[in-house]
Length: 319
Image (tube, rainbow, N blue to C red; front, side, top):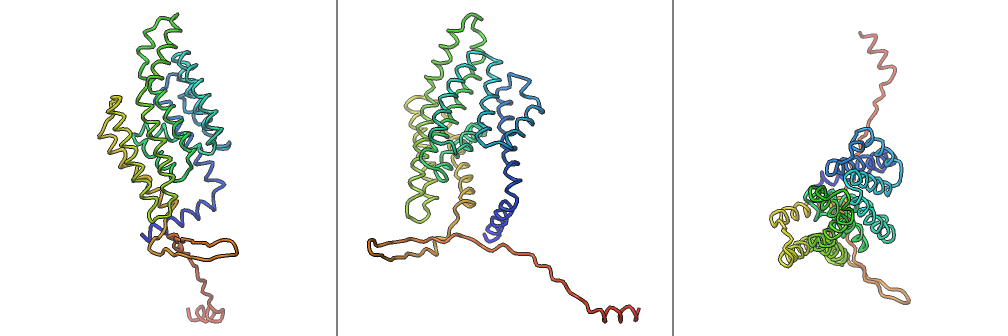
């Protein structure tokens, strides 16, 4: 455990020292992963899949604010969908526009959530996002998580419906619009997932703020169980074709990942908890103080040994 704490302190010091250079690198890598995932999942426009285009867009994202990555990801997605079907691109544009209004109104600082949620869906661990954002975010972080889930389900529906949409005649624009909108509005799996994710974010947030020992651990386990129960109940009610095995495995993996996040963000020693009570002219104060788990990173010391010049001359004379 001590070695892990030392590693964490060294990592923090390293990042603080080189933050000016590491932040653009992280944004560049996030943009590359996002664009590669979009290109591999949709990939209708070959021009956007070129390595040069991906690298140029990622470099732009690395020097601009984080929210710019969201705009680039949305633009690339719309470009692929437009190549496939103008009707699909138009419907998704309207969805993106409404989500951007909600996103910038309530949770514009949760860029990482709206980007990582669709990626976690692709990696089969989407349940990590609502738990993580409940721990490090606020209740309005549910907007970003829900927006990411809506984006994933919308694009997935269009990809899975590609063969049906291609079967429509060229002049069947209204039929395409009706088919796309009816399919999106009738996606019960998406609705159940949104309810589960929003409830998980809110419950985890309020539990981790309680003044009880191991509040974060209790919050993440409770959030994972709540998420599982809502998804299972939704599957029973609406037959969402939920993979129970995937749900359980994904939830366990998500809890493990969030536990790692806790180690770097909120690592405390409850065995050394102290309770302090004091007062002033107007109030009594009851304070619970929980110390953080910290260790001093070992410092390398270089000791210079100076040999007297007289000893050096005598050594040379003896030789």
